[in-house]
Length: 519
Image (cartoon, rainbow, N blue to C red; front, side, top):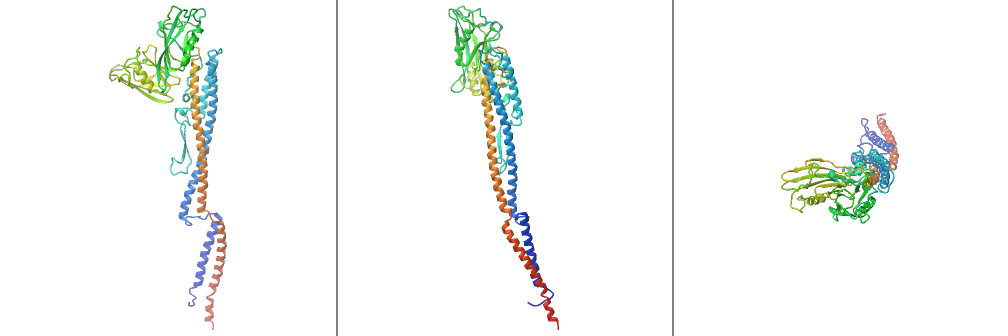
């Protein structure tokens, strides 16, 4: 290589080495001070993109864990409220059981005052935990947790929506219940109104005679369909006759298999109660003794919620369906909605309403499992719909080409609640049946809430595992290898010092040219 004083190649090489070594040293110091291998996209663009995805998933899951924790807390608050409502239902059952005994001698009004107060408390507590009908928690509750490729898999749902998951009085099916005396007193047209007072201790009833009470009873068959069973109950007085209490005892001995009870009402007359659907009509006493009830008097079970057919039309008897006459009625209760259509198809076929027996078969088949039963009156001229639980009904359509009219016209129908004016055990027995259902319904809601708490717990476990693994994956890409970078720093410092020393030597080399110019 020729000697030159214009261009010092060695110095330029040393300067370039100093630049490279200084950059190496600065990069190493940056990694050591930040702890990251990637401090800008220039360090590793592809690796940074992947690491950012892991960081985004970790951020979402971290908030998701907080969401799940908050959701669990909310469900635990609901669960505590449900436990308290369970205790209230137990107390309601205790009060109803006390009132349901015909030997109870205390004040049913006092019992019912406490009972009604507790019913109000059920509504208040259900509203406080948001599980009243339409409440904030009476919904499909979703908690977004993340960690999945689809929104559906990234969230946990606890479905507390719908009437069946509400734990207020309407949802539990115990609204309008009472443990005051109740029951169905015999009535009819004024001439057949029962006026016989069984509490008259000066009278012996049915001496050397008997009297028949014709019951139409709704009996559930093996297939779950309610069938109407005509059951004549005969009370015989014998030579010495019967006291009013003995008449009641005789009736109850025959009625007990059917879940129907007889008692003496507050006005001293005969009444019947229970949760079984029934209607009853009396027959004249045979033999000349004093009758236990006025002949031809009748009633339906007003211990249940009931709806009588033909009330809308004001007609007196069931009209057979003929021609193309059809009638559609929708029944609604806690189990859902049931639509029944009656028409004049051949007798005995589904949908037939050629006579009252066909209509009853069609109705009860359609209403199977709803808790609503259709029962004929004792004369077989009208139909009573009865249920232990609240229900509603409305006629939605009618074709009037022909005859046949169950309710009279399109529109909502009036359901009569259980009677509370008479004394007896009918309302209490009805309340007990509804409370049993309420406890079952509440248990189902508690099961849903408990399962939801467990689901959120499992989801949190998975999310925490994902957070750990995503963080580890991000660390593997972004974090600096401290041991390696410490060694690199030492290397960079030595190289930089060597480069500076070499630069000094390179800068002094042109001075050698001066030796050639001297002399």
